[in-house]
Length: 306
Ligand code: SF4
Image (cartoon, rainbow, N blue to C red; front, side, top):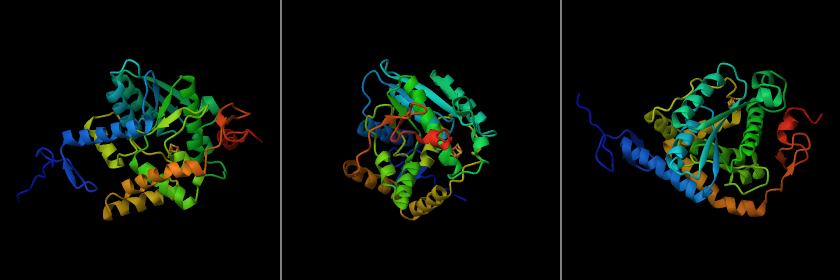
């Protein structure tokens, strides 16, 4: 049987991907160029890196954060005034986190980047494996997310970082926009917008926010990045899972839905920020971390305020 090889729309080489949302077939070279072009544009538009910055990268050893570190190294690695450092948080999840930490170590060693590993155990005296079976108000991922975010920020501050890059891709961002709409959570929507400088919080950046999850996976595969395998045993945040399925179905029937959702949000975010200004930050009276109330979310979840 004769098979037809699809050709790249830019150079006529064999295509490795069809981007339904753009209508383009792309070869390896033009796919990589397309991903890197979008990331550079995102950084220029939202994060304008200045001279003498230190960019900390939250590195889990998975495809998203590993690709983030790899591309930031590709973009800024030749700049003597920009430093990159990886921060890996060990939440204490047996059978999952240890092998992703090994991948993070391998990648940073390949790129010649320092890696700092911090753990819930040493910082909070507990682990997700201990928290997960307890009776709790919120889902496991809510605890894990708040504690990890707090420890990442604390470590980045200690390292003197001016930015904290995380690996959220287009799918993550589109899911969060829809999730916040469905929950009517305006304050979270405001916080999702590109960040402002706030004392005590390292400026966050999401270089992959315009790259679909599947393309991040393909980019990581094409560059043979060392990636941890297996999934987290607690990954069943019900509503986000439902939204992921819903958006993936919509994307099949209406290509470009995820981009449209994020770009609509970006257009509104300035207005949201003016109508609902972010509260100023104070220091948590228990741990000293930046927070909007007297006690930070991490201390509340750990029951330190009782
Ligand atoms: Fe933490 Fe949930 Fe991610 Fe597992 S899936 S690492 S519990 S946030």
